[in-house]
Image 1 (tube, rainbow, N blue to C red):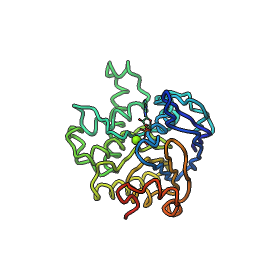
Image 2: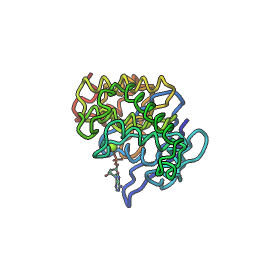
Image 3: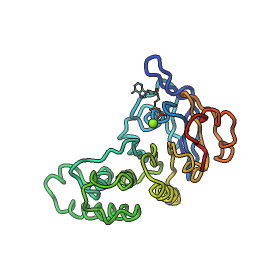
Image 4: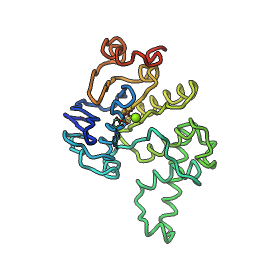
Length: 255
Ligand SMILES: Nc1ncnc2c1ncn2[C@@H]1O[C@H](COP(=O)(O)OP(=O)(O)O)[C@@H](O)[C@H]1O
Ligand SMILES: [Mg+2]
């Protein structure tokens, strides 16, 4: 589904992503972990076209995408959420999701502007599909509430619904559990599994090690921009080098 070959990203003298290669098989949940500053978010930005690569290739379903723009990557079938939740002020949860859905819709901007009849029908369909997503993420009761006034966990769910509204085949989640309490994190874990069970491939960057070990099929470990290891969650937890880079971090592997 996704293949990175010798991907490099330099910011001036800083080698943020250093010769990273890995593959993501369709239908799996793959986690990218590593200490702060390891290059995880940068890697996501390279995959989604938010940043250009310095060198290397990234293929999505066999097509090279390292030079595509974010909207092109979205049109190809990938969607993402951000480490810092980005929702629009003054919009309800439902409207935030409908924006994602509109990007998928056929009705042009002009016909929308003049409120032509065939767009009413489409608008109703978009509304219904967006409500369904809110329902699936168990936040339907907040559909009419201003998104930015919701709890942090609920805002993350809205952001996920908005990404899913693009009907992606690949979903990239940057620290979906950051700032969530243990109940919200357990809920997110359930959601991510449900998304995978819908047939959507998931790549996530995550700091919460118990979440990673719980839901991932495979784990890639980055350290100072380099791939240190790639293995099953069980083997990663027993990998000496990986344990070493997490020493001094607050009981990263404590469950
Ligand atoms: N746009 C940028 N310009 C310059 N340096 C950056 C930029 N984005 C990230 N970096 C640097 O690249 C390194 C990796 O950052 P990042 O990918 O955010 O790490 P992570 O997500 O693993 O915590 C850090 O040293 C960070 O300061
Ligand atoms: Mg990051």
